[in-house]
Amino acid sequence: GEDVEQSLFLSVREGDSSVINCTYTDSSSTYLYWYKQEPGAGLQLLTYIFSNMDMKQDQRLTVLLNKKDKHLSLRIADTQTGDSAIYFCAERGEGSSASKIIFGSGTRLSIRP
Amino acid sequence: DTAVSQTPKYLVTQMGNDKSIKCEQNLGHDTMYWYKQDSKKFLKIMFSYNNKELIINETVPNRFSPKSPDKAHLNLHINSLELGDSAVYFCASSREFGELFFGEGSRLTVL
Image (cartoon, rainbow over all chains, first blue to last red):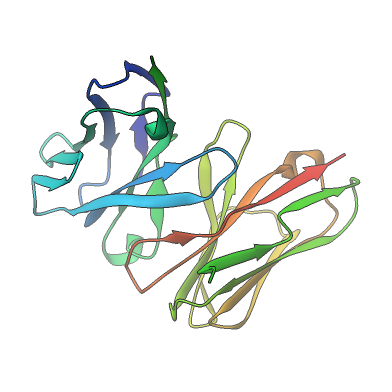
């Protein structure tokens, strides 16, 4: 079945760039998403990329997609303390898999002063 | 205006009890979902409804029964609660094949 994997923890210094990586198994993925979850809150969509794109930039966020390797990354430039959260990678398939979004385990990003 | 709202936000109950969580969305979306997030933050889809019709029913015990009275509401009823049901339950909605909008979650603790 479909699977999405991420490393569980990342620690970066304030002001540095954070890069969160994700791999997925479903080669028919149509959309790939990055969600952010702050403590005690629901998940908020940060950005998404369509599978026929290889890069998307949105202010401090850059998404890179390597469809051949089924690898997705999220780069956060100039990381701030407010970026501390859990970041979830997610994918939506096509056909019979299009009706659900599968989430990775989440990467907990912590910021060092 | 809250886009996806769930009630209650916290629920503490004894094993064996029956409880319900309600969800409403005012985004005009056709599809609604229930996800379960465990203590390790893993997020797993349980159910999805599209226009009141059940379209996803993952491997979930029969004790869990979703109900969608209309496309803006999706409720989750749980019978005979067990310790392992303790989790945060998230409701979400989307346009068909669009991104998910999540509620704030309902934290269920079974004692």
